[in-house]
Amino acid sequence: MDTLPTVLLKPGDADRIVAGHPWVYNGSVMRITAPAEDGDVVQVKDHRQRLLGIGFYNSKSRINVRVLAPERVEVNERFFEERIRAALALRQKHMPKASSFRVVNSESDFLSGLVVDKYEDVVVVQFSALGMDRKKKEVVAAIQKIFSPRAIVERSDMASRKFEGLETANGVLAGTFEGELLVKLNGLSFRTNLLEGHKTGLYLDQQVNYDVVAEAAKGGQVLDCFSFLGGFAVHAARSGARQVHALDQSADAVALGKRNAEDNGFGEKCSFETVNVFDWLKGQTAVKPHEKVIPRFDMIILDPPSFTRNRASVPDALRGYKEIHLRALKLLKPGGTLATFCCSHHVDSVTFQDVILSAAYDARRILRRTAIYGQSPDHPIIPSIPETEYLKGFAFEVAR
Image 1 (cartoon, helix red, strand yellow):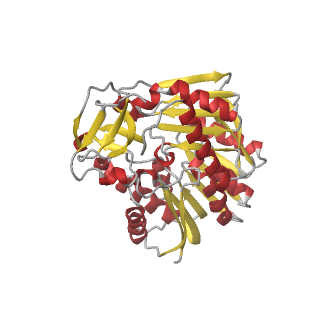
Image 2: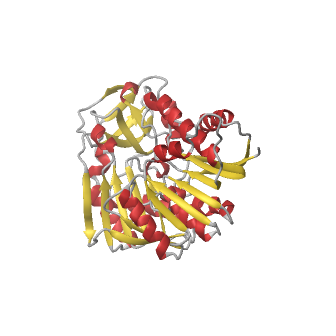
Image 3: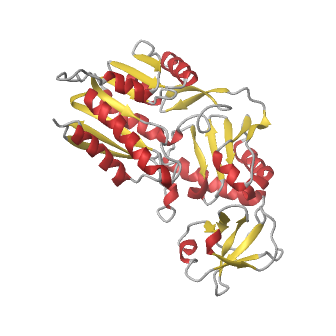
């Protein structure tokens, strides 16, 4: 292996890397021993010259190095094949019946800057870091060898790419694919467009929660807020909900949600509405002085997109979370269930629950917590890498 430029860390800044976190911030770098091109592989050592690992270098990013391995290895097609096979084995162990799932979850699988999602016989990839983007050819070759997919689609359209000096990159990298695909989740079918829309097509991190949350919907009137393609709505209908009303501001998502309900035989049980959820909730809870809101729902599901992308916007996000919970609790019948989620890493579970309880206080409701939710096992959490844990959720019953 050729001699690699060495990034030396400042005293005290190596501990986090030794513990397993792959990010070396620019403020932790003492010096680099030789010139390195952005995107190159470098080795990382502490101030005493002890090897910490190798990784991708990028002087333009706040994250100067993304560590890939604790030892010197060749970052080639074989490297990616071994890593992806190890990640796949983990999913097969914990989600043996799933045919669509996240195969590689970036830092969770020691491949910082890479996401690989399997949707039936199509694979979707995202490259969010410069060094990983430079290895696109090797990653695609490894994926073809492991899965032999009908197509490999790139959805590298996340905003974080600009901090790595990268442009948006979308399209079909291998095979042929038109966009729409029928995806199986928990035995239900969901049409999704893998070339457009949120995430890489579906919210795979909610796959387990779809089933678990739906269990509380039996016999009830259900409101599904921020429904996207109807994941919670259709699962609730299958579990025996009397009626499900789903809300989303995207007309395209609502159209696909309707089709998904119909395809699974629940078209009559599920209704969909294109609307701003905040405005809808506000309108449904607006009453004249001395009037009371009449609760109408046995179950309300809140699964909004992230309200915050950085720590500076957390206060505004918390106000948004409180607003939707306050309105939802006013519409929930006594004994009814609120299933609620937050997908922002910057809002921890304690803070999220505090916001819900604050809303309950203002709504004069006392809640009984009945469940705690997290992300599906194909989005594994490594505690020494806090960024790998972002999705949190709770179920509460209205005690009174």
